[in-house]
Image (cartoon, rainbow, N blue to C red; front, side, top):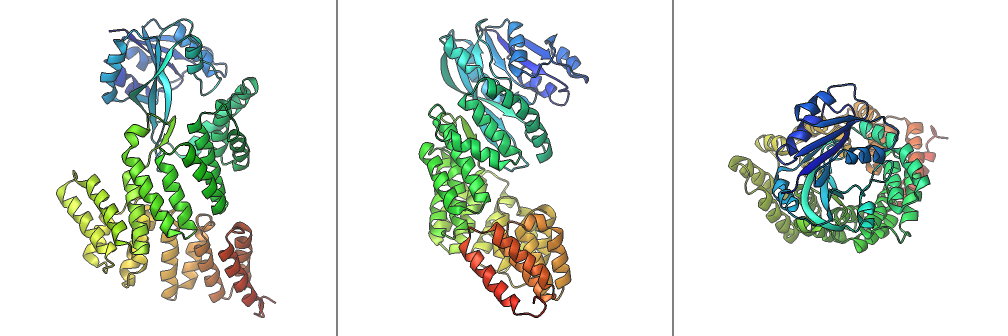
Length: 508
């Protein structure tokens, strides 16, 4: 079997490095680590694993450091990882098979990134494993690539099922932005030197992460007309543009853009789920149901799809199932309910018996419109999660027992403080109990969260009117006219209410 060299560049990675090296210690015959200026225990941890450690002065160029590491690597094959990555244990068997070959090749590996902040994991397929040769060099100051060099030197590029788990993006929004800001300057410099479609795509993603949607939109709009860009990445560009339009409440524009993404890459589950949510905003529940079902079918084929996608956004089966059940509850579609209940039973069949039985009873209760009593409220508290939250909120809104409703909505709010619907329902219950001032205070304390929810803003305005605060209500309506200008029904309703308010002496 050929010797595998693990090739790495590091700086202050004591938090991550040990687990990375543990994941390869039984397969890597050589570990080469290039340190670019660590001041923590990174180097001593590396030496515990008999790594060959070299110092390299950092010069804002990831490829320069990678190439220095390659120059010190003597194995037959190179696997390169970052410290916050781990080789999946289930991939070792396939990796050993590749090491036994003599093929002059590079292999695509799936790098799966965990992202709890955005509640959605994703993967990117990179060539991370390749036959060693002194002619092979990385290029790109950031998001460095090896594929061009391999192709220039006559290598075959092949697929593998090797998985690398990446935990470095499982951090707060602030940490992601910090990382993106660090990369932005290098990406701009790299693009100015090498105007490739891939580096431009990386720039667009970075601007999107930083919330600069105007710049991201400019870049992705350019990329969709770029013939050099791989179709799966071009589909991603359309998807980013669709999300930007959706954030502007331009549902028609979002629909057209995500449809183009599906046309270019019909294997991406998230596109179908996103299209379903676009149709939900349009109140086209018939089409919303069709696309939620398509998302479920696409997700069941994910093992085949991920080898064909350079980037895959992973959607948990439970997210699609509970969204489907939410739509079926809204439409009282028994066939649709049956389809998604079967899918739910399929994914929970191996769970602990009592847990599974409770969940089944809960779904039977909520989907059949039964009243939630004290006993069932406890089951709700045990089984609430980020995927079924919208379904349970919608079901709870129709319940009669206000004490149970208030208790559960407060519980939901404690678990998911950024959920606008929980806040909105608590405020309504306060108002119904004559505590309008408390309802206003709750909504004002969460104004940023509610700012993109027209229904919540209507409620807040109505509370202001009830409290005689007509000026504050007018401010809300002025904001809505500006923010939701593309939502015709909302604007018509706002104008109607404003006309009525104008007749009040306080406003005049």
